[in-house]
Every structure is written in C-alpha cells, then in structure tokens.
Amino acid sequence: MNVDGSLQVALTRRPWLKKVLVATRLLPRKQADIPWSATVVRLNLNRPLPFPNGHFAAVYSSHLLEHLYHDHALALLRECHRVMQHGIVCRAVVPDLEAVVTRYARARRWPIRTPGHG
Image (cartoon, rainbow, N blue to C red; front, side, top):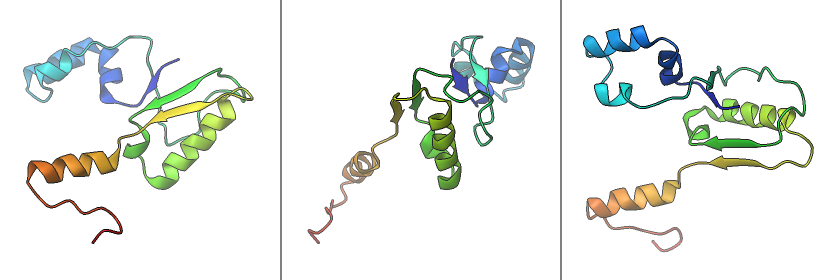
C-alpha cells in the first residue's frame, strides 16, 4: 500500500478540479502533469494509522519525516512500528542536512567550518 498526504493524491481522484486549478493558474501545468497512481491512499499522517497491529511486511518512508514536527514524526514512527509485522525493518530516507548546507555554503563561496575545528 502506498500512502501519501499530498494534494497531488486528491487531485488524481478529481481530474476536473486539477483542470480548473491549471486553467486558473493556481496549479502549474508542470506539477499537474506529474503522473500519480490511482491506488495511492491519502491519509493524515498526524493521526493514528487506520491499520491493525502487525498488518505490513514492509514499511518505507521517503522524504516525509523532515516535513513533520518532531512530536508528530515520533508518533508516526511509533505507528509504523505498531503496524509492522514482528522482526520487520522500517526504512526511512531523509535528507543529509550537512551535505545540503555544505553545497549551499560552497555555492556562495562561504568558508566551511567543521565542528571542533574553529
């Protein structure tokens, strides 16, 4: 099961609304043209997951946790643990903040200081 909380999921199920938003320039055409599967489920991930304990054999998260408040991210991880079968590993992909800041600083030719080195 693929779960997402974005507007794109809602618009996939309402193509007429997507057309209106593009026509009124409230949604860029480039974003509207991104293909989304109709099988993606939209959930509010700040609430408990609507699945029974031990329901899933795999849990994977990609670039989601960094968009949540700390307490909400911890609650979601607890929920993921609850719905996972025993012994399953949850994989979560999050941005490497140090790499992002380093690229940003280098692009502006700022000196880069590493911790403990002044």
